[in-house]
Amino acid sequence: MSAFILCIDQGTTGTTALLLSSSGDVLAKANREFPQHFPQPGWVEHDTGEIWRSVLGVIEDVFAKSGASPQECAAIGITNQRETSVVWEREGGAPIHRAIVWQDRRTASRTAELRAAGHEALVRERTGLVLDPYFSGTKVDWILSHVEGARARAERGELCFGTIDSWLVARLSDHAVHVTDATNASRTMLYDIRGGVWDEELASLLRVPMAMLPEVRSCSEEYAKTRGVPGLPDGIPIAGMAGDQQAALFGQTCFHAGEAKCTYGTGAFLLMNTGERPVASEHGLLTTVALRLGDRTTYALEGSAFIAGAAVQWLRDGLGLIESASEIEALAASVESAGDVVFVPALAGLGAPHWDPHARGLLWGLTRDTTRAHIARAVLEGIAFEVADLALAMVEDSGKSLGRLRVDGGASQNELLMSMQADLLDVSVDRPASVETTALGAGYLAGLAVGVFSDLDDVVRAHRIERTWEPRMAPDERAARLHRWREAVSRAKSTEAVK
Image 1 (tube, rainbow, N blue to C red):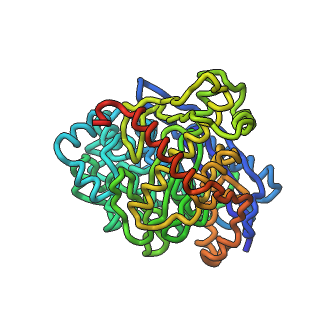
Image 2 (cartoon, rainbow, N blue to C red; image 1 turned 90 degrees about the horizontal axis):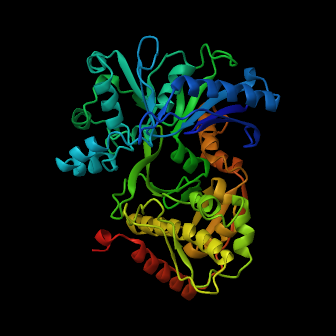
Image 3 (cartoon, helix red, strand yellow; image 1 turned 90 degrees about the vertical axis):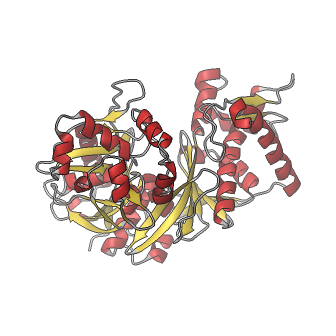
């Protein structure tokens, strides 16, 4: 059997493909961007045809770069932008509307109505989520309400709903199956994460006919085989599937309760494996499905910081303190500390555990001696403090100690930031050899299904850590830093939140 796995990472602004060997080596990588569509303020859409062309493009590119033959591909793994919603015709597969993207806010009034009617507690208890336009349920309802005849067709079973994973499997298999996996299902606001089934009461509440929902499968099994895909032979098993953040958790081999990963991009996404028991958060974190292997479901707590790498972009584009994002590390390292300067990155409000959308960014502690180097260092520390807040909230909610943190994403290349993170959390911070952990996770899941990897221990052996940072900060200094950070956060919060 060939040991090459094709990993498809279908993201918000582009699609990436990796070719992965059985030893865990990335043989080649390809990426293609595709357009974003903004029909109205707050609306974000994707053309599924443009997504499909990007997928075909990266498949062609990755095999050309590697020199491998598509005939040697043992399996395909898929990971995807979560919550983005597609509705298509069961016969023929034509979408009836552009995909509505996870960032889209057009259903804010609908979720506000549901909240005012007292449905938040039900949604939270069944799904682990909050009532928000971010998730898929109200997006599907909007499409059915605004495309003529769509609701009646959906009730007759003529239409399919799916997140991008579901739609991709359908396209890759010439619409042989209509499936999703448990991680993506858990992001729809329609799925009972404890029962492991679509919830009829929630579907009725959100006006989504049960007949249009995909079959929910595990994250590692054969869903279908390729058929009629340009550039690929028929018969390749499509065998691994997970939403992007859950795929990154798996790609970072966080297989045990208490293990966590953080992806540092424009924002920062932190997920902690909480084991086979879903944990209800008291800090506004989301409870979500981390993984389903066979009939065993693993859960996670999830929290996000809205601003991470975006703070560095703000320094560059908004203040002009640096000319390129890569300059910040050397500039921040040119001073031993930020002095008394603290930066609260509430440039888009504060998320968990503070949840204050009206909070504002704050630079606090400026003196005549403050230089742009002190500000640069404070910005990096502000990112690390945000993530520390999320991690400490997860420890309190789960009762699990955080032994180490696995990191990935573009900003994980900033070694000073990673050192700060280790110091503030008082844990080891590991960065893998490849930070494309979402695609790796999908590849590992597919490899498990077809026997390229024999078990989870085999996946761990394939995963390589490139660099580890150990905490060096004294406990009293850490406590003082966290105290000053919390004082700064209290100043950044809106008057309503402080009350």
